Image (tube, rainbow, N blue to C red; front, side):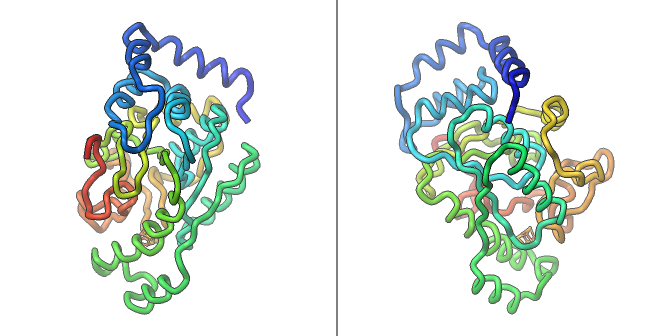
Length: 277
Ligand code: SF4
């Protein structure tokens, strides 16, 4: 768990950035928001709050179950640390596709021990995986985009639906500068298809900031990051990137940039979830 030094660091950082304008923004928010309310005021308020304050604001204004989905990447580990600090009672969930790196499973166990939490796994349905592999082969995702999308749908998207069932807020570690597509994502957006608010409290963080935070607070991170695996997903679909390559260039590297999402951050019909959508 974060110690007193951690807490003073985060609170001091937030206080230093909070000005009169921010107080006004948070003051005009309705006393309680739900998934039907516009996310615009939350977006405005988030812009002048630190990550820990963003989460506390959400907890103050939105009732119900908060679910944080982690894949144990750098940002997710930072967010795990911060969520543990806030005590907002978010559930930790992960999608175990069955194709993760051994290092990711090690980090999963290490993270649970460090923060005294349980990260609930959501697995693909056995019958769906059997049909998928029977149709496309064990590594069929290399052969066609449709096969890859089918695999992500079975191993990620369907389990995500179960992980988020009944949630009012979905918290992610998404950062805007991870890719061009993610650059247009807001801090908070209603996900009409799932009937919840999706919140990205680290949206404006850089990778360098996340790495510095992790180092300063002794947050456990995946050793693969040091080997050039900047964005880590399933083992067969992730490779190390070369210096200067985009952060997510190692994910589904055989596909074009526009296709490099797995559906988790898109609506079911393929559109990005945007504020007011
Ligand atoms: S990332 Fe690769 S292995 Fe993982 S679910 Fe998607 S296609 Fe399948």
